Image (cartoon, rainbow, N blue to C red):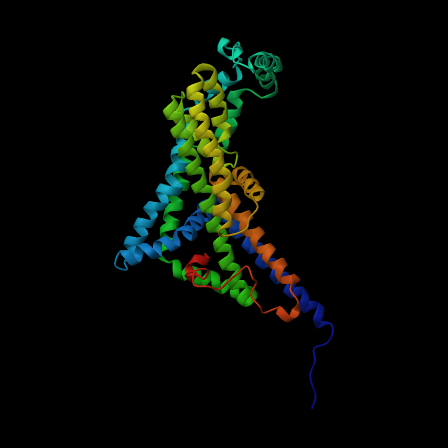
Length: 383
């Protein structure tokens, strides 16, 4: 029997065709991403909210007699109240009060430490020492130094507005996000099956586990960042309203955005405490200081707990994702950036763990991916 084998000259030609086909496919994918680039932030944000609220959707659907339409409506309203409305109110408040913000920034830079109050000098034991400390603080001249180093406040606000964009662009992004979110909730099972099939085609059962791991990471980061920012800004805003801090609504909006940017509530609350101490007395300053400490404790305890409950993601990675997402996608990138980096980090870390396993345990699930009824959610959670 004669076996016909292709001549050796065909092998390089076949390899060339395979390489060209792969390059063509990659080029088409990149071109497609470039075409849909204006819709990517809204799509990623919608997928993030959809993955996070999917268990809630299923629970509400059971309560509403199995009606998917009613469940999608209620879940969309919840998503608006938790993820969209606070962000919209904060950004619009900042954008509509640019003049007040410039005045507030100029007042902060023009702040001068007043003379030491007499009652502080007469305190037993520490009175004489406070006089020396007070004079040292006055000689530091931090406001004058900051006024020389920092650029004009008008330019800073202009840079922020360039990143934020106009009301029309923000409204369009929010509208696209809600439309895509409703579509994903309506056809969640089909989308989840598609993603699971893609993961299975890439790496079999391990690929399906990777998809579930990505879903848990998205949920943990979304809940941790957003819920923590809401709690911190609510506590800080309540403290500023109760103590009578000027421009409390604007400062609360700035606090919320600062918490989303991972800068923490101390950016606005600590200067407010110092201002209250000098101009409104020690009583109001102490009350606001209590609210400030509570907000900072929430920032350092609640956020890591909520994130690591779903996935072990370094907080530094989230901070880098926020800054990079803001530069790449605008304000919506505050949410998009951390999601992309966190999911990528989690998947790469899991792949590296797989590579370190011995060949005899190649088919054994990782200890970090338990298969229980609680940890194996509905397939649509894998989006």
